[in-house]
Image (cartoon, rainbow, N blue to C red; front, top):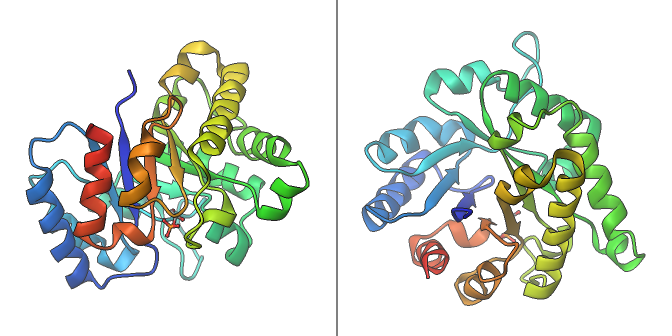
Length: 251
Ligand code: 13P
């Protein structure tokens, strides 16, 4: 049985003060609920959000991390720095990192391997553009992203990987993949992971869906066999939208 995993990627939104207030509200509402919930604030907000999340079961994660241990890499943040704060979870390979900051599959693989070597848990994002989908390349793109990003990752380390399928055309657009489309992409990815790591790893793998998830569509998406959680952007920025999404994972 895969436990639902609902994550909020705040992207470059919310100040430290606003983030701390939001997490306090979430923590109070989620007390005692059997669901895995994560929020990923901007780096500067992490200390305030961690402090506000203390005593709750909300995981605080980073949105990105360097593939280097430390050194002369202006503007970067290392695993060691995150771990020192108490952060053990990180999102890697988000489509915004890929498209705006030039992260390719090989670079993402380096980040994955380094973060795993430092003991971190990873939400690894994959997903096709509209053009790739329309030209029939969905499976080819997802195969390449998964295979390259996971090169050198052992079956044992797969316990620390969550995949997030986020079709690029559904991110921040208000357009959601239909539950059927999302479920079939997830089933394809699970099959791919099975071919790489075997049945047990594939069956235990959490695959989140991301792209315009909101209270009105969360239940239908999360009800599908292969959709084990959500990676939520815009609707994770207020408790009145995020909490109903978390609740729909419990139904
Ligand atoms: P939206 O929910 O705003 O579409 O963003 C999805 C996303 O990119 C989460 O990582």
